[in-house]
Length: 311
Length: 311
Image (cartoon, rainbow over all chains, first blue to last red):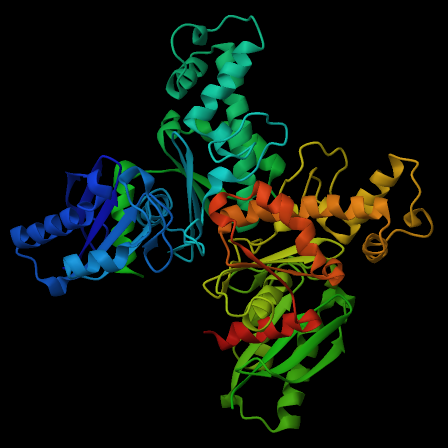
């Protein structure tokens, strides 16, 4: 049996896993992400943890394909990360540095792209070689898999679909400085913004007027039949479908996998996005399939391991 | 020396070439595209012409990698074409049919995608493995090359960037049935539409009020300093830059290669598109390079040959 390590570096913890070549997680564990001192301990901590695990399990190095790593920043195809503000890193050759420490082959990628590869391999996109993944969280992340491989982009920004322009009549700025980005509508923050706009434009009552707005609260209220909540989720679906239609027209993927906190509302999200998806997508791409992400927080370690396992 | 044949099937002629492994065109010629009888003679005509050329040049079959073909329709990665209305074809396995006739390995692709591969190999995109090509003709075509390979898409519609939605406030329908498609503004037809709108909105004089509007005429008038023509080309550049910014944010390509009739205006097109490109593109993709296509009508045979030559 051959193995690979998958590592997913987050802002507070590093998630780690030992996986076999079928993608089964033999074991997974976490270590804290020590962001102090510009995050200089992070890679040594990861290397020590892997070496300890190899020892503990009595593994042969020859049976280990290597270590795949997902990191929260743009990573180019040589494993150079440009910046990872929330863990203190500036530009560094992540792949090379970790390889020296761990004495195993290393491959590095952007965390959203690596998670997409995990979903393509073992999750909602399995069986498909061309996939777009969109993660609807606080922001909107994305990852593109073509022919089973991550589309990194020359500067590691491949799949940054959260910042495509999808609305001409926006007056509020996105965090990136532009106006009308996909993320301004399709994120968990986006649906709250849409809700406050729709609630502000009418006096009609709604359960949403009591308590704080949240993406979960809005979807729950819509499922319970609250009229304004239904209107908000439809508007949300309109923007989600519009943005994904633009991506699908360019890429013509087999499947679009939807993950992240907002996707916890379930398959209703497909009904919400499809009308505008079908309106805006090129006719040759009408047959695009949709699926929910399946791996949750394990997508990262799974995709990371797959990077070193290869085809 | 090893060779490959490149074939580019157009509506009136089939362009054919014999290329070496460096991409040098040893010889190129054309045969008519016989579209009658649902285009049933097209593949036999191509096969006969190739066999005659092999005989004429006294080539060994062992020295020929095969035949690459670009066709005017959506082609999937198995070489199945879904439809090619203007040459009379319905769905057919182009690759398999031609292989039987010509008794050589065949690869088939969509003509715009194949031309993009040609430009990536030997034209404006050479030296770059991740490239987006946009062809500004009567319509807007596109082709995506990632890792030196064509992104076909599951239904052969990869790179159909002419039909991404880029304008919310459009009232006129695109040929595809949607409103606000990239092609409605960035094509040769698009600039004429923009011109008629701008000329119609004012009484100001312009040389463009005399004679018929054409993309060449508009660029020539702008270069000569005609104020309204300058305004029209700026508006054209705004839309071109906006559409390409959306594509670049998703793909983060090294270079965007611009071809087609409108690109004959030259490098001025970069100055026109850059302000809105920089406005709309994600900051991580600001460094995208631009280049003009270099191969003209030879891009198709060049890319077609490259498909069978491989890496």
